[in-house]
Length: 108
View 1 (cartoon, rainbow, N blue to C red):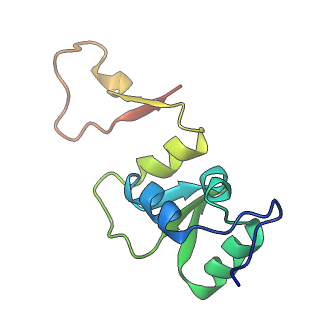
View 2 (view 1 turned 90 degrees about the vertical axis):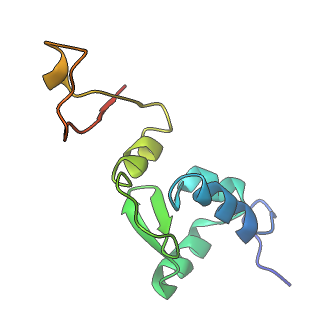
């Protein structure tokens, strides 16, 4: 019999995988709870090496490969998906020109 979260939901690994797949392997604590994963189950998966903690309340399934801009995804999830990515303030003098290596900035 599968373990259940405190509200009685059965953890859905496939649901969590689908959420993470759309977010470079990352998911939030809230998203995990929606998929039926309790904090205790996440702790178990942390200890077993299945997931890693990126930020407080943000985790990553280790089976996903790294991406060029994956450093932005945990911040976006940490802000409860409220942030908007835009050009760096360095480009404000000439909005039509962005430096080749100008990193995006998370704006709220």
